[in-house]
Length: 101
Image (tube, rainbow, N blue to C red; front, side):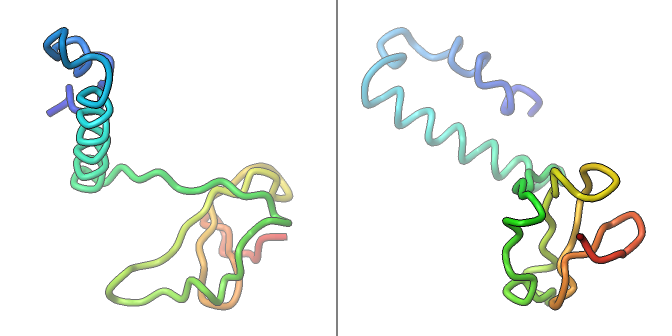
C-alpha cells in the first residue's frame, strides 16, 4: 500500500501509451482519489492553512457526531504557527485551548 502515495512510482509503472493525453489525466484522477481514500484510512489528513485574519467563521464549523470537528493550520498565530479547532464559537489552539488571536 505504501506505493499508493508515491505518484512518481505509479507513473513509472504505467504502460507508455497511457502516459500522455486523456488516459494519463484519467489515471492521475483515479490515483489521486485512491491516495485520498488511503490517507483517510490510515488517519493522515491534510488541513487547510489560514492566517488569523482569513479564518472562516467558527460557527460554520460546529462540532458534531457525524462529521467530527473542524481543524485548521494557522500560519501566523501569536507565538508561532499552530493547529486550531472550532468549538462552534471560536477557533481554539490545540495545545492550550486559548482562542486564536
